[in-house]
Image 1 (cartoon, rainbow, N blue to C red):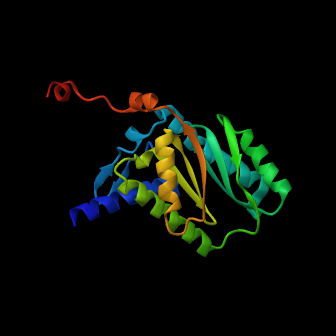
Image 2: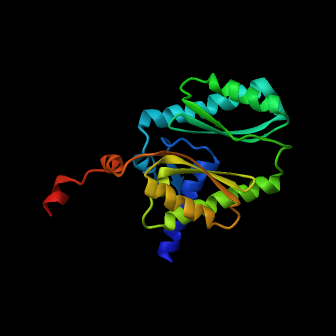
Length: 212
């Protein structure tokens, strides 16, 4: 029972950070407990995390100013690489959104996955959010994977994976996503690092622990 409760808290924290676009710097309060360790396990620098949050906010604002309500665009930034998902009514609007976002400060690159379709229904968006939660839960359950190393976005059954991960982690996460109910396709928007780079990012043990 205790394990199930802890697992639920972890999944809720991870899903909230994805679905609600919460800043990794802001601690999450659940049941009176501070879940502030997410930032510590993030493989981006604290400055980059702040940049990514700023990119998402500014890009969303600029899109609304330039295109209004005729588009539904989700902006997800990881390590200053921006993923655009959602729907636009025309190819011209798709290109315009990308141009608008490209002018946002600190944007390094853009992956434009906008679909030229009518806006997704509330039912579809709710289904996508559920799928994202399932994928994150699968990552939490995996003993050989750091779930917080990934950002997960789902649009119309297509799940996008973002993060700075090793090839081993990328393949493992892809297998988990592909085996998740509701996932129709997996698209990897990942930065591949070496195992040595990963070891350099991991917290160093305290001196007292080394002596033991």
